[in-house]
Each structure stands twice: as C-alpha cells, then as structure tokens.
Amino acid sequence: MALFGSLDSMPLGEILSLLAHKEGALEVWNLKEIPPTTIYLKPGRIRSVDQHGKPLPPLSAKATLQALLLAKEGSFEFHPGARPRHKERLNWPTERVLLSLTTLQDELEHYRPFLPSPEARFRLAGSSPEDPRFKEFFQLALPHLKRGASARELAQALSIPLDQVRLYLYKLQGLGAVRRAEMGARPKDKGLLQGLLSGLRSLWAR
Image (cartoon, rainbow, N blue to C red):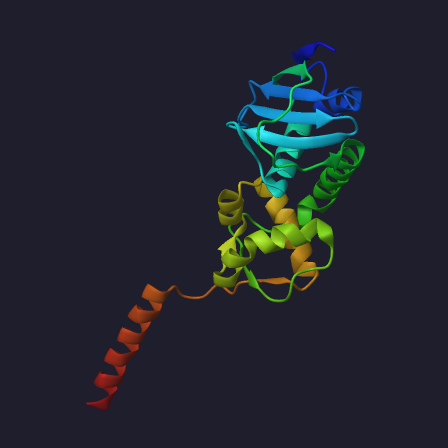
C-alpha cells in the first residue's frame, strides 16, 4: 500500500488508524522543531520510533508521537514491509497509544492554567508513584530531582516537551512525590552574607 502526502491534509492520527493493520515504516520529515522520524509498524502495533537511525526510549518515543499528532506541517511516506534493523521493540498497541496520547493532550489543556512556571524548581519528596503514567518519568527524572531541577532543565535533560514536563511535575506534586524547592540564597550568596554578618559582629564587639 503506497501512501504519501503532507500532515496538513492528513494528520498523523488518521494515518496511523489507516495503517493499523499494515506492516512497514512510516517516515515523517519537514517538521518544525522535530527531527525526521520513522515509525515502524506491524499489524495493530507500533514496533519502534526512530530518529537519526536509532530507536528512541519509551518516554521520548511517546513525547515524539505526541508532538507529531499535533504537527500541522510535514511530509510523510509509508514503505510497506520495511522493518527496523535493530532489535529494540516498543510493541505498543496502536489504538491504545492513540487513545492515551489524546487523553494526555486533553489533560494538558485542562490543567494548563495551573501548571508550574518553566523555571520553578522541584525536589524529591516521596517514593515512586504507582500510577504507570508518571512512574517512568519519575524514574528518569530522579537523579535530577534529588539535587533539584526546574521544569525547563528536566525537559532539556530528558528530551521531553516542556509542557509535558510541567504536567508531570504538577501531577507528581499532587501525589506527594515531589515538592517545590524553596527559593533561598545560592551558595555564593550565602557566603557573602556570612562574611557581612561576621564583619558587623566585629564592629559591634569593638
């Protein structure tokens, strides 16, 4: 089945539904702020999501699919029968992924007025959440959260869209897994303050 065109005439969600029972590689390129991406399919499932010839880890693959579903510009072509050369597999049910990503987007729009600032910093406050939607993000963000990180820093470190990171942090805060870091003096500032206080004490002691 030969299929090609542009995302402005056929969104990715429609393309994946149309190819739900096909095997092959769906290449998508000419995307704004998204590298050329190849989605490998088999009947009813997404095998892998690749960029630069390499498979993306699950969280990045999900974020990329989310961004592609929202993309209004870009070109695509389906290559029947093509398979990835690597052995890594996501093996995600296509319809379930589409439903999950649509739900995530609805949540994002619903909670957008309450999402933390991109510069707001968060620290670890509890254990890993049981909710599988946030568990993987929590595990990947854990080293950064232990020392404190902003939503923007996490988005850059984990290669996940900033708004999704803000939603994850908002949800994790509600679950008690993270907390907003207090805005205090930085280490250099603290040293300066301590020096000033010591000087004042010396003057008072005279």
